[in-house]
View 1 (cartoon, rainbow, N blue to C red):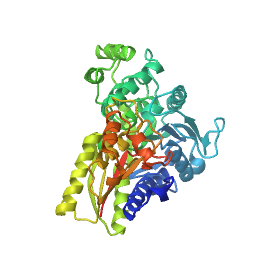
View 2: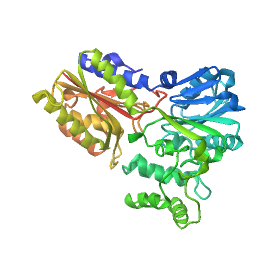
View 3: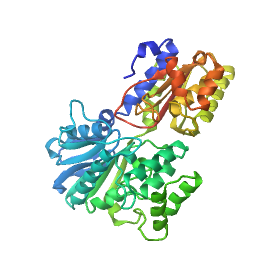
View 4: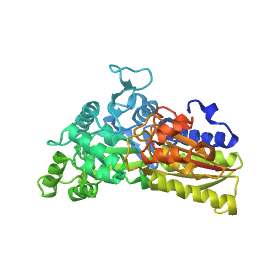
Length: 446
């Protein structure tokens, strides 16, 4: 999974950190997750603790998308076989061996879009998903694939908000350090599919949401902007986000102002009757990856400590907190006595002020490396294999990674952690992993 792993695993501690990372990502892959949570027993389809009698349905279709979309569709085909009627998912990677004209996994059409900024390809895919949802009826079971990345991959902008405007506001919000909740509040109110609207379009079909969460707290209305979940946010909330970060997006602002004035309906509320036939299941989350990494640490006779699965805030600030925990553990044995592995997840952000390369995990790693004790090794990755706008998953560092403190601080100041770490062979590359359950950090203390 990790490219050039042998060169990165230069000490036993580095090797253990990488093993934890690999185990965490592997545990969150669709094949593993669906094997554990989805099964067919005769005519009964079991999804987590839910059961669906397939004799009640004329059609079973798969709709949705995200970075795990291809894998989930393929795993569902393996479970359902010829009971699967078809469907459409939008993802960022074609199935193995497929071409642009042969994009299918089993009976499900796979449309390739773009992430983290929406594109024309995603727009076409979202249209196909909405058309298929509109064709569903009371005899249809919709297996809704809701995985991280679908907010960008399924744009479906409303009339009056062009794709270019949606791209611009997405880029600006990502660069200014807005949280995913804030970004999605804006995107939901500029979309025909987000904020519960996939569920309302599919009504009166029965909908089972298969959710791979990439957001802190697993808020169903935020994962992929909640296409099958009720939405409590409002046009006023979305406008407040633009104001908070001083974002200039005239077409988006105009639409939100009209919505706030009552010219357009709000997104789907919890009392919408469509949700009477909707059940969402969180099949994987950041905790899935953390728990798998913890088992690897335990089997290696290291004491595992889960710090938190909900770490957020500026990456550099959160990194110093992890350093402080390493220092306390090594000097006093609190909150865990070495040898130990401290694990965390969540989603940190970066306020972009420079023009360098990198992402939150690389910035986290470099900020930590400036202060790490000699007995510590830290690996930080985004489980989808793409850290921010970069082409790497993250980085693995120790105190020796920083051989020039002034250069390291300068790299952080211009948001070029990726450039600094890449020159020192500290970046972790996995390629697209086919899943997305947010960040995973592994701190090994010898």
